[in-house]
Amino acid sequence: PNIRNGLQDVVRRASQRKRIRQRAITLYMERISDTVVDENDRKVLDKLCPRVSDKDVPDEEDAERVR
Image (cartoon, rainbow, N blue to C red):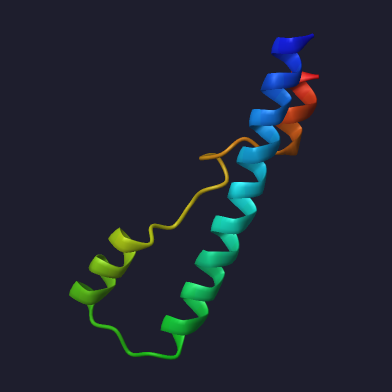
């Protein structure tokens, strides 16, 4: 039981971080969409704030599988 609760907590926190990162990326994309950025600058910006895929962080479905 303690391990399961611990795993659920880890997945829950990872899911929250995922939402926060997705929001940050959305804001980032909104800001640079209004700006003309050359290819070299785009590469630097992507390194500073990489695009996150949905597979990078466990989501609620993963939490359900742990339960």
